[in-house]
Length: 215
Image 1 (tube, rainbow, N blue to C red):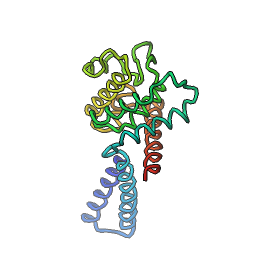
Image 2 (image 1 turned 90 degrees about the horizontal axis):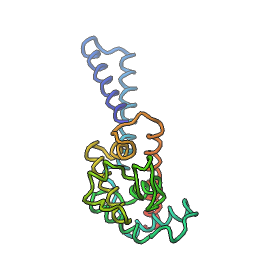
Image 3 (image 1 turned 90 degrees about the vertical axis):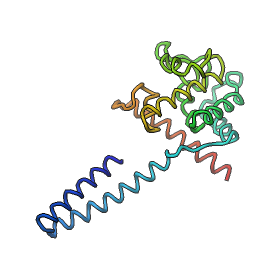
Image 4 (image 1 turned 30 degrees about the horizontal axis):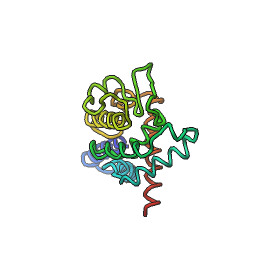
C-alpha cells in the first residue's frame, strides 16, 4: 500500500514539474486533481492498515486466556483435555508478550497454525519442534529461552524470542512474521503469503472478540 502511495506522489511531482515548465492545461489540471484524490484515498487506507499493526496491541492475562480458550473450544474440538494445559499455555503466552514485546494473541495464532498447541509436534522433516515449531537456527539463537524444549514455557518463550529476532532483523512486524514462517523477510510464494495472512486474520478475530467482551 505504501509503495502505491509513493508512486502516486512521484507522479504528482512530475505533473507539477510539467505544469511549471510548460504551463498547466485543462487536461493536466484534471490529471493533477485525479492523482491528488487517489493519493489521499491510498494514504488513508495505508494509515488504517498500519494502525492495525503499529504499535502491536498488549493484552491482559485474562484476555490471553479467553482467546486461547476460544481457539481450543471452537477450532480444535478434537483436542482432548489431557493433551493441553490451558493455564500453562496462557501463562507462557502472556510472559512471552511481556518479555519480547509481542502481542500474546499473535503468539496464540502462530501456535494454533503451527502445532495446535501440541508439545510433541514435529515438522519440516524433524527440524522444527514443539508448539511454536522453532527450527534448528531459532533454537540455537534463542537457546537461553528454549532450554530443553520440554515444557509449554520453554517452547513458547523460544518461539517468542525467535519471532522477536525476525522482527528486529526484518524491520517490520509483517516481514518478521514472514521470516518466522519461511526464513526470509520477503517471500513471493503464495503459500507463504497466505500462511502469514491467516495468522494475522486469526489475531484480528481474537482481538475483536476479547475487546468486545471486555468492554
